[in-house]
Image 1 (tube, rainbow, N blue to C red):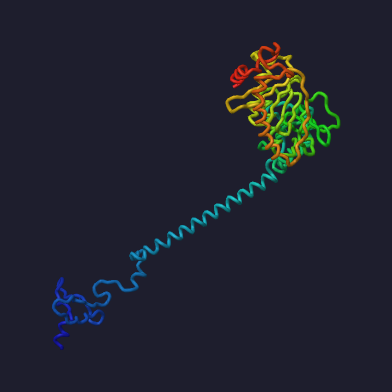
Image 2: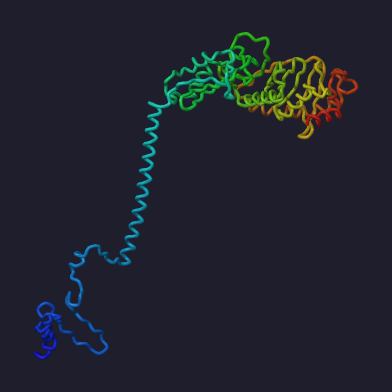
Length: 422
């Protein structure tokens, strides 16, 4: 045992003479501080395991890592992956926070801008009156610009967004009924613009409140007890209580659409100003009178654009082949055999201007049902009257008709006039 212990203890080296002096070399290991532990018995083929104390072979002690500055610890693979996963979730949360912060910041800026625009900025310094095409001076009709500005009632130095433009426009329409169109606009930074178009007295109609004077667009200009002498009359209308400054209100939606469509076609063909009377005829026997001498029968409102275009071609007579300026009678354009053939007939002589009754408020469906039967009966009787006229009626053939009448009574001449109109 003593011999084995001696073998495990490393002895210091021999003393050597250096420079004539004897110096002792320091031992590699000291028995008191770093003894070499005994090695376990190892069988053949087994791996050798050596257990040494820290510091024996140059390893650092446990507290060396804390004392070593700026030394990174090696990350394990699973730990780095876990940290990457946590960082992604944190980044998503940060993005959400940034979005909410940006949203509230923009909302705050909008609130500040609104408060500044209402209290400090955008003061009214100019008010302009213009035409609808933004030209000046404006055509204000019977009113002056001072009257229009007085109806606007927007004082200077008031905030530009401190009032409702739509409300001001509605108030001005009631105060200034002889303006067909009124538009109130804001023009940044300090101008209020009023665009106007004058209204003209074009039509009149009888209502329960009296006779209403209407503009081109059927806007109520005024209500009076007596019928005006110089205005054409619209009869057969079911009208609600009229209000000056508002558009004419019908009792049925169908009649409102019919009169609007008829006005568009008459003004589009350029014969509305020559009309002296319009009768709605309950939607089945409508007609209008041209220059007080030709009564144009429209019948129903089906294919109204084609009927009015044919009537305008015959009445204006730009080619000189149809009705002259002295012809008087009844022009029937209500008959239509099919979509390709449309026949018309002119009966010279005097005519009666019947006044139809206004429809009841809930009679729109019945009027539409009777319109189909009326058009069918008229289309069936029109060819017979054109080909074989009765002895008591006006001449319908080309040979018997007077020279001033239109050559549109016979079947051949009717088809020729129809093809030219198309």
